[in-house]
Image 1 (cartoon, rainbow, N blue to C red):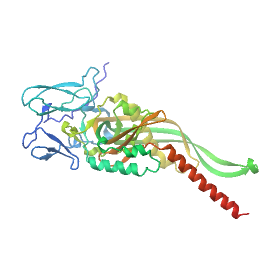
Image 2: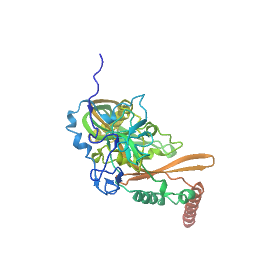
Image 3: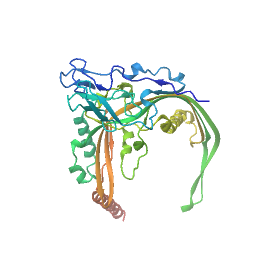
Image 4: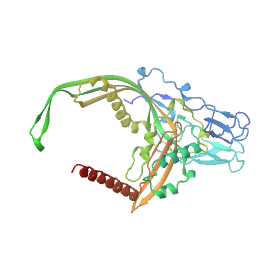
Length: 392
């Protein structure tokens, strides 16, 4: 029997299409995001507007009633034969313009200079269900990164500090799956309550023996999760920490995904983006891992009486329903290639494009680290000598 297809939520922005999309006031196609206001602005007449919130067209509803696997049209499986190259017909002059969606979501017509954008969802992962616009400006991101690096200047490599280049702070829209889930979990294991303790042996062989009652424990929990974010890029999901520190992206979560808006390629003007290359099936294992972690935290308050701890030996997860939406989330990213002694690593500092949360990696000067260690050792040695001298 052929299984029924997953129900799909159509999230296409119906009033937009591929090609020329004009300012609703003056008709210009020169449009871009103004991060400080989170609004699209026409560069000709300065009119500002925004697309509708995705939540208005795709409401959460009662998550406890969520069943099956519901997928947004922008999160549908990527077709193996889908091309990244799209040819658009200019609505201004009729010329054909080629756009490589692996690199950009729009291009300017070489004849009439109109801007053409990709807004219709195509099965190559380039157009998501929604986008969360930048609200942190480039200047604010640069200041945040400078402050972050400045707090670590004591041991930071001096070349890194000298070569900091504000122009290399780049705004990137990262691809994520944003998931609602309705789930249940069961956990079982053993727990202990201490009943006493006593000391055995003497001298260097002295040790403490603890007496405890051992219990078999099990717990069941029903729970829902709203807007869980999981990376939808295989490059980000499988990070090689030996050569780069791009795992810092997850440390600047969460994003206010409830403020995501319906897709409009003009939100990407002036920024770069990474295309989604992971489908629902490929991100499901990570979803299950995170749901189990949430379940463990949910049952934690109920086992507080076991003062010797609980060891969970069996876990079971039942996912009753999920809803998947593909979304671009904003990150300001600074990268620095550092090579020392034949070893190289790319260091990253990332700023959440909505909240300003920052985290990153700074190359360390081994010489300054060694000098600090020697200085600390000398101070401790001096204190010990002074104490010994005072006790004689």
